[in-house]
Image 1: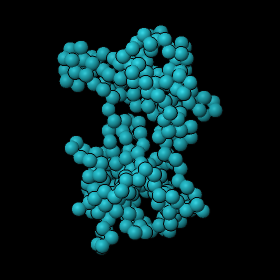
Image 2: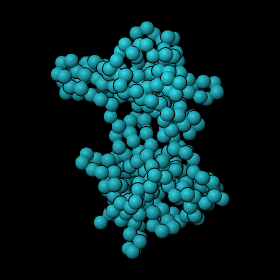
Image 3: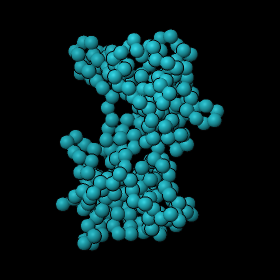
Image 4: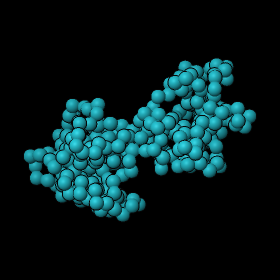
Length: 305
């Protein structure tokens, strides 16, 4: 039976002589979400230095010429601008999100590893909230137009009373390991030479740990013996929480050759640690982008050698 190892707040230290893996994007939030202000419109209007993250038609954000997150003064926005309150910055200034479509802005996905951690987390928050508003303008039960409440953190149907709140979909990504080997795959639609850890969404009535076991079996046929939590990452594409795990096969059993699910994967195989390190170093393969949990898990595992 699969079981949980002792949870880890952080991955084990890597060899100090090897390059440490890059940081995880969107996980450096410093904003005070100040939820107690969401129902107090009078206090919200009185907040000092109100500024807004501008979110474009997709998942773009406004940045400065120096590549930092640009916050627009609320006074410069249209008088009828619908704003979502995000919280208070360290100086006590109010921060909002504004749907700036059809502005031409910069892709958050391409900037996630370059922005300051706190700015990246703020941008992800804004993108997630604006994305939620865009797809919940009508009631999912009766189809009536919904009304924005709680400073943008609730939409209520005035017809049937259904209340909708921002949701985050939990997803798991796991690096399957067997002694000095790890299991990587190539997905349909990804760059031809990109190899990634396995991943998938948590289904209703399922724990993240159970999802790790199920996804590994469904995608590759490899049975998981033990699961260990590593870290998590807000992922606003469109609205997920990525939960990263180590997954281990039974060391007492013969290694299972992966059989990739053809609708999901192009290929899946075991990689020796030295072989993988050499392939990455010599650009024969590409890992997931810096800042992602997939990159973090694989880079950490390679650096432990």
